[in-house]
Amino acid sequence: MRTVMLVALLALGTSAFAQDTSDEIPTERELREACAFESSGVRECLDKKAKESEVTLKAAETAFATAVDRWDADAKYVTQTRKKLSDAAAAFVKYRAAQCAWATSLGGGAIGNALEMRRLACVAELNLRRADSLQSSAKELRPR
Image 1 (spheres, rainbow, N blue to C red):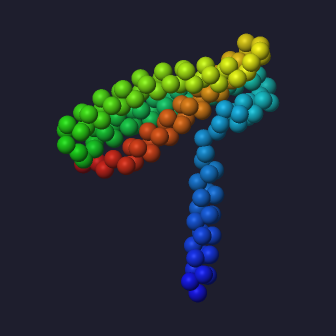
Image 2: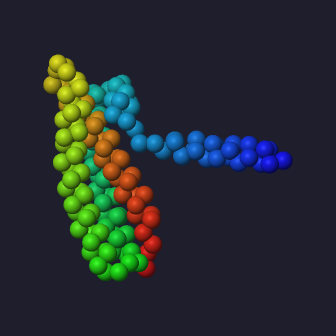
Image 3: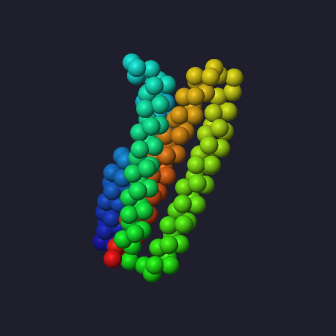
C-alpha cells in the first residue's frame, strides 16, 4: 500500500513539474529559433524581444521595490535591501554586458548582423531571467 501511495505521489509531483516547465524562460538559442521565420526579419524580431524583455525587467524591478516598501520588516532591513537592490541592478548591467559580449564572441567570424543577433538574444534571455528572479523574491516578502 505504501508503494502505491509513493508511486501516486511521484506521479502527481511529476505532472506538477511538467506544468511548471511550460513557463520556462526561453534560451538564447530558442529566441533565435523563434525569430528565424519572421517575415520582418530575424534581427528586427530579436531587437523587439530584447526591448520587450527590458520592459519586463523594469516592471519586475518596480514591483520588487514596491514589495520591499510594503515588507513587514524593520526599517533598517528595508533600507538595507533597497541599497542592495540598487547595487545588484548596477552589477547586473555590467554582468549582462560582459556575458553578452562573450556570447557574441562565440559567433566567431560571422558577419556583424549575425553577431548582433546573438547579442540581442543574450540580452533578452538575461533580462527575462533577472525579472523572474525579482518576481520570485518579491513573493517571499511578507507585506505589513
